[in-house]
Image (cartoon, rainbow, N blue to C red; front, side, top):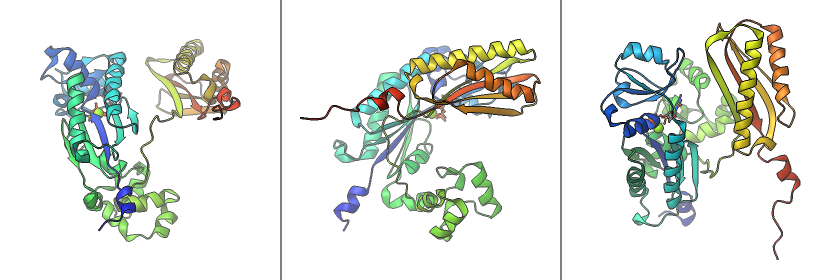
Length: 361
Ligand code: DCP
Ligand code: MG
């Protein structure tokens, strides 16, 4: 028999991910595109695909692929420019739907979110049926399809949402969590990036199950603090809560130029424009008073990237130029890409100084 403490600790997490989101919206809004391979992205010389539909994926086209390259693979590819306003609108629609089911919604991007539906009582509490209904609601409101993963934690739900894509869902019940994770290639585990994957491959470790041979101490020794989480994950355990209203930690903008910038005045001009865009974005998101660090990124024509940053606790336009000059002193060669960004503190300076809430009574 399961004790009440144990059963309470079993959560029901759903991960929802829209199917080829930007491309699906473009096809929905222009039926002449139905059935054709479609990519959304910059049409310019150096444009890349933000995404593409499943017809285009058959040609091996994928996100972040240069459009020119994609067109070589599939000359009939329909390339549509990005319409961010439309994607944001659809994103708001789906978030409204999520809010009908739980307050514990953690958006990961415009088209993706975790939902903790442990306390949702309808559908006899079946998270599988809840996910099905959410997908139905999404289609009714947006005419777009979504896929879902259902499981006892975030890692499993996210992996499972890919299992039946597009327009499908996959459930991993709690008692199957450990077996589900055991057969996964290690790069699927949350937080295991390229470096860790390579490190483990070099040791002959390819699937999660093989990592069970290591004790917690060995895991910590090999992977530092992350080892604790990894130890749990390979056993199907992931304790991270669904965090509603994720705090934005940084904001950045960058531009890849159609032609490399050679002259200093061109570079300054481009930088100024970029910093202005960054500032506008921060104003719009009401984050200007949270700026902690300012940074810039410069990539030269040989694809070498350099960054410079300074902690100063406020947004200062001129600081970006100073950072740029610092990098330019060392490398004044033609520039292919420029980026400007800020990292943010969780609270604005004003907010910290003000009393947080009025005392009760
Ligand atoms: N996106 C982007 N640049 C990338 C990856 C994605 O601009 N390198 C955008 C376009 C996608 C959206 O984010 O439509 C969502 O990303 P996903 O990874 O969820 O990809 P899709 O929704 O397009 O496809 P899938 O059906 O595989 O989820
Ligand atoms: Mg998606």
